Image (cartoon, rainbow over all chains, first blue to last red; front, side, top):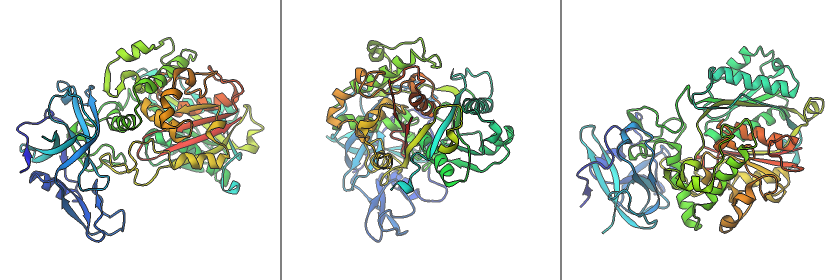
Length: 149
Length: 397
């Protein structure tokens, strides 16, 4: 059962993610809205890739499909942000950003916020799972992370 | 190999810069700063500015070559070259491209320039005022819909993840980062051009300064300034008849490795400064190793990238960093690797690293305000951790 967040980790006002006008990453955002984490999969050689691109970097096929992942991973790196680089963050400091190595992939990582106490000690290697954060007012869903129980 | 290189065929013969200002401090428009830096470089070289025929720059340079050439009354306009984005990673690459154009006979005098008045345009440390983000925006894949909504909005945010991972893998504490900041501030105290001249920094101040983003304290981050700098190159033959002692280009290299430029922090070999393929090409072209380098200017938008770059250029192994990357080792004139001897991006002026190139020239001329005795070989490392590409330059006297 996917995890759904009850409220957003960061306050409103940050840039709203929109699918690229050329349609490249629409399936990624559509999947997130269904509370699924997907990355590209080459129909020809089965290589997984992220961020999305129009061509498989390994075999150069343009036939790319999307693969659903478990939504689990490990913290590969992290940071605690203390400066408001955007006015919307002025009262939201500090916050934690993690870079998560995704289970079932070769070297694919995803950025998200680590839920919980923003002053918590963060351990590289800790197991985490995706939490889907819906923003119905602007019709997008973010993928955050929480420590696996 | 030698027939394919620019080694000893080209020299930097003139350098110039404006007064350096805090962000918002420049009394004139950025374009005026740009022209002023180029005029000073021509004067330093002893050539007429109208005789410059090639123009090269990098990053998001706004002052287009054609406008500058027209404004300066250039007679023959033979080259407009721009390193394809990559911010500060393009500094030495622009010098390398200029050197190649001269060696190929395209141009006689090429000026490499960068004018950057952050007070008149956007700050690098603040997010652009945009309400939405789609995919990887423009040439800067760092800013993308896959990271911005999570609060990764500025260069410090992007590279902190790399540095944290590197520190984790090699058991580093804050000391090597602090040493770089302290060395830059120390050198700036001897340099009247430096914005932080007269503002020394102690380790205690460093430790007490606010976090911008862990693991970067305030003093691990470059300044935001107004200023411009320029360097003029010509053939070794012409260089011999000009005013200054030539700073010969020993080698230049640019680029990156396998899938370095992938959005959403998916650089394949992540905890690196991206020099693993570039630095070996540099040293091969020059025919030297790191041991032969007398003085280094390493681009520090954030100290952590310099730490990685030291390893990737062969100055030490990762496990030796805690002992090698110390204040004593990094200061001129007697440190093992005198680093950023003008104060650099942290304490002289953030001109996207162009000021570091001019300082590298001063060191081989023997005219730095913190001169390394008998400096023969001077290294410039441009843009550690810049995913879009990095570059290197070696000069000798």
